[in-house]
Length: 96
Image 1: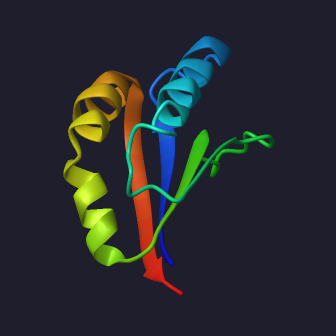
Image 2: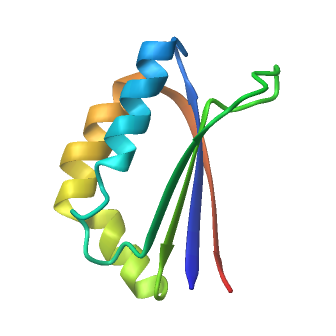
């Protein structure tokens, strides 16, 4: 499986904004055929070094991940929608 993890730090991490971004990320389930696993977690500690939200996605292979990355739903209904809420994001991608 190919795993793609993203950590998001919101520019205004209110409960409403965190919930909106989480719901938007979860909306990918069932809308992107290459997506095999989708998990969204909200940080519970909220320390200075914490990010607000973690996204974990899994794919059969790297090629499926690359298709997901340019998928119209992912780009138009997720990335563009949450972009105004995001201060910074970091990713890790790996094959196991």
